[in-house]
Amino acid sequence: MSNALLEVKNVSKNFGGVTAVKDVSFSLGQGEIVGLIGPNGAGKTTLVNLVTGVIPVSSGTVLFEGQDVTRQRPFEAARRGLARTFQIVQPFPAMTVHENVTAGVVFAANESDIEKARSIALEHLNFVGLGKEVDRPASALTLPSRKKLELAKSLAMQPKVLLLDEVNAGLNTAEIEGALDLIRSIAQRGITIVIIEHLMKVVMSLSTRILVLHHGELISQGLPDSVVSDPKVIEAYLGTKYLERRQILQEAK
Image (tube, rainbow, N blue to C red; front, top):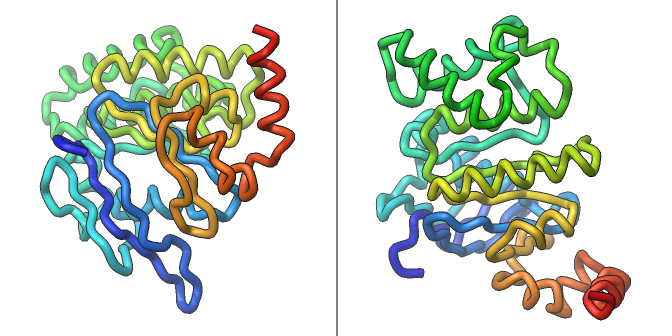
């Protein structure tokens, strides 16, 4: 992809004798929403950890805005504009909602003016729908609100690429719809999003492209309709029943 924001080239990760990620290559453009799917243990979270410097790559290259960032550390990734959420939401429980996001602003933007940092944090909290929760302890939030807080903390880092790991886990149908609207709003700001997700209706609703990992290998990538029809993806992950249900739903429209 020309003018790629993020490029992953032939990246592999070995843990002892086990290859968790094998020779994976892909690129991301500005404003894309890319779904990353695959069975449990396929290497999805490991791949995100490699891209953000949480764990070192065994081989291969990661380029961000044309710069080699393969050996970057997590705080360096965040300051460059590579932000992520975690599958298990991790706010600072003893701090208020406002303080949690303010800390993100101070860290990522290196903002020494605390009042300015608080003002920026409030903008992010209003954007995700937590403007009325600013003074509550983070520990008192419901799961959906904790997930919104995680997004606000990520936005405070002024990301260019946002990696979302199972942000819809534990949410009901109505809460998922709200989360999808919020993710679309983030993408409209020009932020590139990679979403790790097991719910295929979420992936198909959001994604402009899909990447599929299986046993650490990228077995398919491309437009959503093409990927979910790929025999390798059906065999490794989706199963024939998914394709049959999808065809029935399409014919019913």
